[in-house]
Image (cartoon, rainbow, N blue to C red; front, side, top):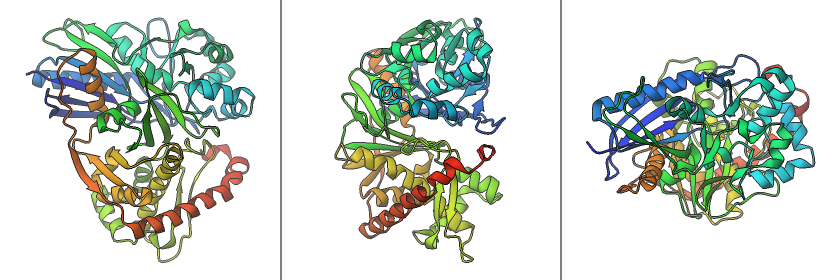
Amino acid sequence: MNYYLGIDIGTSFTKAVAFDAEGGIVASLSAGYTIQHPQPRYSEQDPVAILDAVITLINAVTNELGTPAFISFSAAMHSLILIDKEGAPLTQCIIWADNRAVNEAAQLRESERASAFYQQTGVPIHPMSPLCKLLWFRENEPGLFQSAYKFIGIKEFVFYHLTGQYVIDSSCASATGLFDIHTLQWSNDVLQYAGIAKERLATIVPATHVIPFPAQNNRVLLQKDVSLVLGASDGALANVGSGATASHIMAVSIGTSNAARVMVNAPVTDVQMRTFCYHVKGSQYIAGGASNNGAVVLQWLKESILNTRESYETLFDEAANVPAGSDGLLFLPYILGERAPIWNAHAKGVFMGVGIQHTHAHLLRAAMEGVISVSYSIGKILAEKKEITEIHASGGFTKTPLWVQMLADMFDRKVIVSENGESAALGAVIVGAEALALPFMNKQVAGEVYVPVKEQHVAALQRFQAFERLYTLLKNEFNSTLPASTE
């Protein structure tokens, strides 16, 4: 059959979603992998396991449906892998949640270069940035830093092992902290500071870059040749796929992590360096912020704190029976440190106001409310520059109506949930169809629409103000008195 295949390489899963030319989903598969924490502050994944997941999913879909017209890719941002001349990894895939470069980030952030680098790259100075990770290797693993053939991310790793080419789309390159969002090239100033030459990075190409892929391949089992489209970052493509391409529409995505973004037609940065600005394609950029702490907070609470085998559905039902505000229980969800908007890798999770009346359902609801407060802390900054009239929601949290209603109430805006729920993969297919000039009807059908309740918004705003005050009170304690081993 004639179909298009979108591959979304995420933090917890890779998804393969097949769409017909009318925009309908004809197949959807996923394969998961683990995040390893071998030392405090470390968050790593096995790049070979991710590559294997991508290949397994392509084979599974093509075995069922035949060879697609093209395969287009979405990938998580901010990863770093050091490789040798044969393309073998010298390190694990160091992901966005890794905080080992906290000292290097702090040193750079306090220097005169910080603002200039941010204005040039659109990437706030933080350990999640591949720039800061490179500085960590230069200082802590100088032998490995010098011997590495190239420094790449997970999408470049996958593409090299599929095609033998080291290429990176401008969207993923834009999230490295090494890319000039004004010239759309690697930044000579930043590379000089990092101590690397651009030859040690992948070649920058547009999101619509196409690589012919032959059927005769040892691992990918195709019936005929196919075009591979490089695609873009998952954040950029989530906006494209969810229909949040106008500047008055905010995309909020809560999966493992948590992000709010708007699409703009020129670079937009923030004087206080609270938000990012990444290239998408052409004249399109996304401005926004990403938090380390999305649904991973609920996973941690369920598995490590509550230690329960109850299903998430059951837990959410129980949380729904707790009144908004969790009977005075407030939660800062910074269990993995934090990126936007506070950019504090030392931040910690905190329950405040615990009383004898509180149950595990209260803990869960407070955690959900805390995650939404983080979304709002990012979104309200974006709303300072752009009038936001609606929110398009995507990610796993959209399967929980209670959680989406919390979002609508907090922002006091209607929230539209994409019916297919696979925004990044759909965005990849939209870019792929554009690259190859193929017909594609993006019948982005709105699913559930959540309307804010005014009284709930007022109460949610009061809780958010308490949320901000609590973080402000504890910020110095996080930074100066808690031992590093608690990361």
